[in-house]
Amino acid sequence: MYNQLKWRKAVEFHGHECPGLAIGFKVCEALSEHLSTNASVDEELVCITENDTCAVDAVQSLLGTTFGKGNLIYKPMGKMAFNFYFRESNESVRLFFKADGREMSREERLAFILDAPTEELFSLTKPVFKLPEPARIFQSVVCENCGEKAREDKIRLVSGKKVCLGCFKEYDR
Image 1 (cartoon, helix red, strand yellow):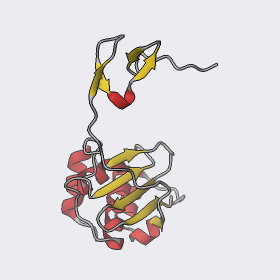
Image 2: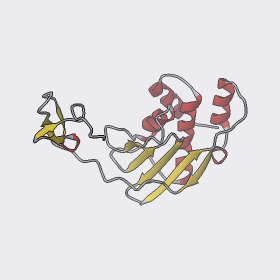
Image 3: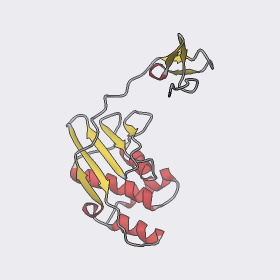
């Protein structure tokens, strides 16, 4: 049986119940079954998600991985997969959702995911990405074209002018 309080927390964060959120919820359960973890206060736990689905909301709300803290990173691979890294113990794991091809209604799929054993839902392998460096704080630089500030690592030099990515025209011949 799954933890109802944690499920409610994820639902409250996400806004509704859905199979996608249930996948993320079960990702968190599977992670805790295979590696000892708590919610990340800072960057002890890092997640590189290979998707931008509802599942990511459960990972954010239950594990404390967020874009703002720099310990949730999105790599648009289009796969229902999550790479986790524990900085202190050097442990890491990749959880890939093994889709079940059976025809089910939305409600049936939700119940199936929530009730299924995690080993039935996921394959566990080594992460496909390297552990990223800890988040850095960058200086802001004023774009000499639009006047807006941008992180210094996102500024480009064009004809001697510092420009933001929004004003930068890619050379693509």
